[in-house]
Amino acid sequence: MHKPVILVLGTTGQTGSKVLAHLDEAPGDYAIRICSRRQQQVDEWTSRGRDAVRLDLDDPATFGPALNSVDRMFVISGYTVDMLFQIKTLVDAAIKCGVSHIVHQGVFANWDTTDPHFIWHQLVESYIKASGIAWTHLHPNYFMENLLGLTALQKGSFPMFVNNKAVGWIALDDVAAVAVRVLCEGPQKHSGKDYWLSTDSLTGDQAAELLTDVLGQTVVCDHKTPDELATLMQGAGVEPNYAAGVVDFMRQVIDGRMAYVATIRDDVPYVTGRPSISFREWCQQKREALLQGI
Ligand SMILES: NC(=O)c1ccc[n+]([C@@H]2O[C@H](COP(=O)([O-])OP(=O)(O)OC[C@H]3O[C@@H](n4cnc5c(N)ncnc54)[C@H](OP(=O)(O)O)[C@@H]3O)[C@@H](O)[C@H]2O)c1
Image 1: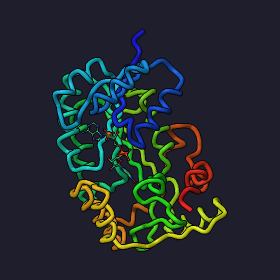
Image 2 (image 1 turned 180 degrees about the vertical axis):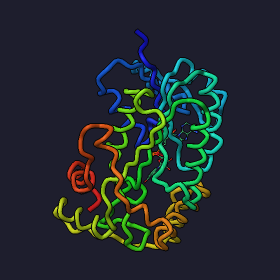
Image 3 (image 1 turned 120 degrees about the horizontal axis):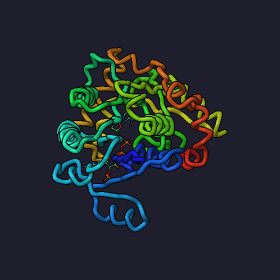
């Protein structure tokens, strides 16, 4: 019997690495292919016996060999406006290669959002929908893992940029669990579905309170302005167009245009059959890593 070939993009990143880890543990018989834009990384994976190929989203010439014989793929792009041409060309190649299902990671956007980087995701989603390939779109809200990333807890404090407005949080293990269920169960069950991933609605101060409780150490939220985020992202080398989009997102949360990001909309139990990970549980799971930031 034909084993579905599943290609996972972005496995060196924070979401893709979890998708791969969950996929490696998933019951069932699948052929898993991973990819990187860096040949050295591909060689390292290949030497460990993995099916690994070079795929550079900026170089469509790499798409044909990478997508050949792929049935289903997890599509993710980095923090850049380049997602527009990257995913457009990738989808074109997927059509030519006969890929039958695309599972795409987007954002938690209302249909009429006015935030630039949310709109780029929507345009990508529209193109995937129009491609004729079966699709499933994931809409994660604010990653809990941001507390271990660019806006990490440091010296007992973490920054937020929304004037203590609430946002919906999601654990990346939940995003990965949903993605993997969808990839394994395939288009027959999940084609044409949007899954919304926002499990806990908390202000920065409420998140700090929970962190304090779980870690047994005082944690505070440092309320900064969107302009301060612009400076932080510039220093971290975030692509300028994307950075401007994120700053605009913060402004729109503050002025209420994007107040809906505080909504809880939790499809995790429906797709995976288990409850989603609450913010408190996530803090407990990541206790050791978070304590490094005290
Ligand atoms: N942070 C949030 O709260 C949040 C919330 C909702 C949605 N999102 C969305 O999530 C996505 C980012 O997910 P993430 O945090 O998992 O990203 P990430 O950790 O930055 O990982 C991005 C992955 O994409 C790969 N990649 C980047 N450019 C590539 C290229 N040209 N060719 C091939 N691979 C390339 C990277 O590979 P390399 O190792 O080669 O760089 C890496 O594996 C974005 O679309 C963002 O809008 C974020």
